[in-house]
Length: 141
Image 1: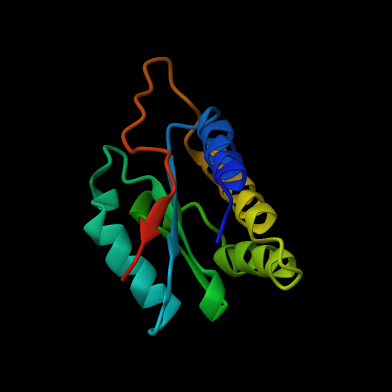
Image 2: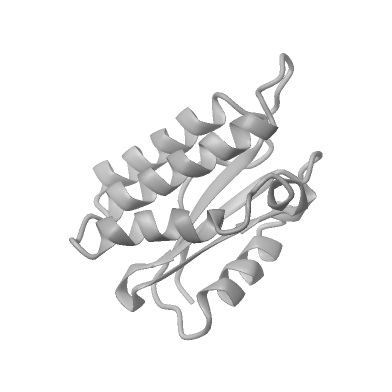
């Protein structure tokens, strides 16, 4: 789905976004998604224990490129910061790249938009700890 170079670009976009915030951003790429992508993303969010961060400020970007599906799930602290329609606007921008086969760029753009939101609500603190790994998660199910 993504080349090693593209995976590195996604990880770097996560690190860049998290460098300005205490929030956590993760990306999960699913081999396939047979259900509603929001339901799948929420299950993965819980499975990865993303709802256990100290400030409840994590976000999962879930992408199933072969099924043309994606979703964004934010924990309670992030959902409060997002204005109505924000998650849809992130997805619309990502899909604008996906439809042209630019999966990596779309994911990186989504990470950047999420980073802007979380930075405004959760700026990086002096003793910030990276609570969740920045690596891309592969969902083979």
